[in-house]
Length: 90
Image 1 (tube, rainbow, N blue to C red):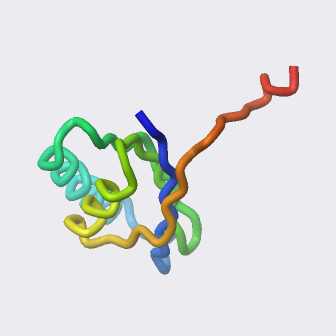
Image 2: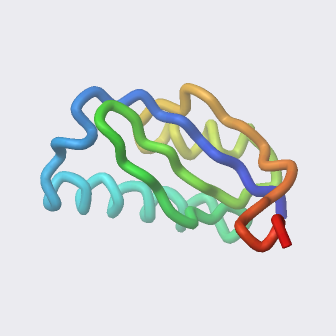
């Protein structure tokens, strides 16, 4: 399954409370369930004004549909071509 990194502009994202992040996450999971097993949210990284999400999905359009239904942006969607880590240096 293709892997994607989604960049979302969310002003003040780093200042969201645990309760706010939980609510957003719950809404996202509900929409994912409705869309079916082809799309999976792996994790997200919250920074000052952005959220970077990692998803598995068959295509970019399904990720855009998820974002539309949740009511959040998907400003940039990038397909992961390769994965490297410290073991790549060995």
